Image (tube, rainbow, N blue to C red; front, side, top):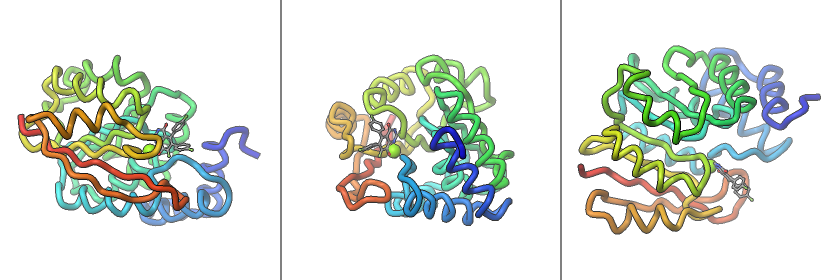
Length: 214
Ligand SMILES: O=c1[nH]cnc2c(O)c(F)c(-c3ccc(F)cc3)c(-c3ccc(F)cc3)c12
Ligand SMILES: [Mg+2]
């Protein structure tokens, strides 16, 4: 009876999930999206690639652009070492409200912090707001037109360091051609493409991993 899809997703989780079990939260949301209604979480197939990159990078600080219902925040947060922090930015207050409840349900509200606002407004405030100097990993999963300007803003704000890993969702569907061209041609990045499928479908999509070289 939830009025919006995020509310219906949260209600399904509260009814069918195991509180405090982040792995179960990921699986329960995937079951909702696979059997009840599609939602734009990174999903299980691309999620396995996200897991691999997180485990290889072992980031102490992660910045996510685009929280939605908190699925990828939980997916990444469940793999972080104790004391690590994940900051996730969401401009839609209704999405942020659901995400905070999903993250709390998973027991990750100590490691994961949701900030509500636009990336353009929040990114320049992050150093002041948080006692974070640079991020070890960035997950771009918000609006495709914002990937490139926000990456340049992160550079300008000194939030990237030599070795920071940028991982971008949806670089094929719906596609982020200007961002791809930038990270693949700039001498400041070393990029690698991971072909996959659009969440809960068999349509082609992919992730792009780009290491900032400073
Ligand atoms: O906007 C997004 N942010 C983050 N991740 C997304 C994602 O993982 C997606 F799969 C889609 C998607 C792709 C194909 C499709 F048919 C519907 C939605 C979108 C998206 C794209 C265009 C819109 F108008 C609305 C949503 C997003
Ligand atoms: Mg996405």
